[in-house]
Length: 259
Image (cartoon, rainbow, N blue to C red; front, side, top):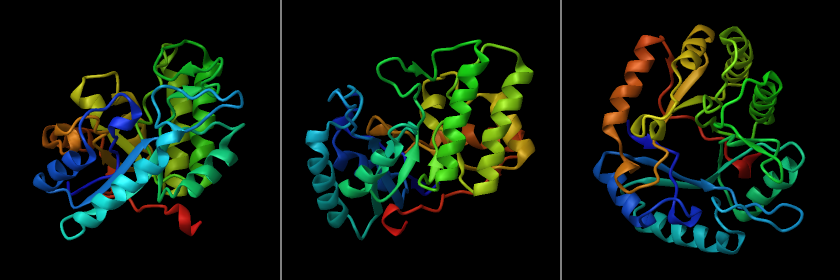
């Protein structure tokens, strides 16, 4: 694995280490194509900003620091700068315009909430038996795929559904089918592997294999060490083999400035 487009920075308030340390670790580990995709800065209409994103006041610093480092290491690694962003139907057009205005080169989808997060949104990983909530998650992910704005879907299996397996299969298959139709890869997420979270969720990847949707890998690095993660690569390869996944390797970036 010589690529990783899922990297965070200390600016999201839940990652550690400097961007330069991440770059140095990636180079040492054989990464040649790297993307920084910290959580998208966003304020709701009342001015509220969530505590897990890059603050709007630090957007310029985010890009200026990374651009300096990109130039410094240009002979050793190809660096792109973007964001991990949700799809919130009410705000999506403005979010996308802001991403372009900020200078983001690409986006990955990380649907951490349904119901648009604030004031009454539900975390995707909370766990529910409500079919309507599963359907809302699926609808958001499918709409994001169809928008053409996202390079890939990060941890598409983040939603915890505690209802009937047949319902889960039916709904998640819609994500896999959209992924295949629009050629937007689904990510096997290494943070989930490292921390033994509920994802990667094997039932989701079984469906992915049946559909033949494209699959990629992402380190989801929040620490310097995880900017290169060979142990998780091996575990992800086991999923690929077990479910005959259509692993495409490095995803093709959907560059926002060319839309």
